[in-house]
Length: 153
Image (tube, rainbow, N blue to C red; front, side):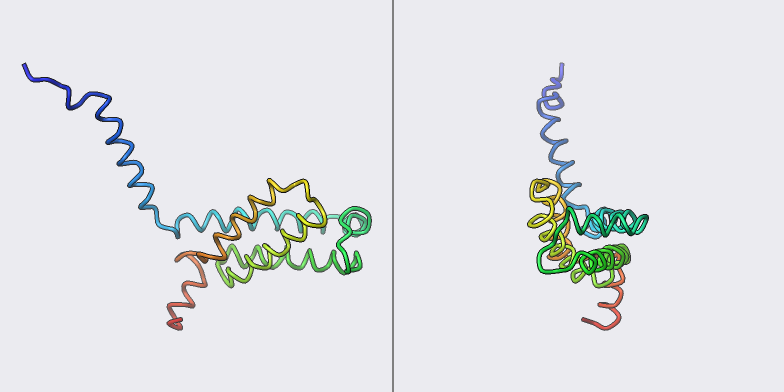
């Protein structure tokens, strides 16, 4: 009578795990970059929408709570909203992705350092996503890639 030892769960499990890991390793970066770009864009876009919903409250926040050094609250509010409106659009399109990620990484650093230093777990998540985009770019499903191919950069 033939033995079924070769198909025992103890032997199938490592093989299955190996196949799953190889499959996951094969997921192209471009597939991962799209949700990464959208996720971080959503965070900053929503922040801009909140500020624009009540500009007086936004100015009050920059005056009383955010207190970014060296910049008047009104100027800081305009700078923040401008960044939060433009960079998410760039990220979603995959246009000037590395530049947009660098700007948002700088903004995240300011927020962490001067505004909400105890929110570092959230800021670390933003920074991790932004660092991947800064270092690896937007992936092939982007205007950056289209322009790179068109102009052979």
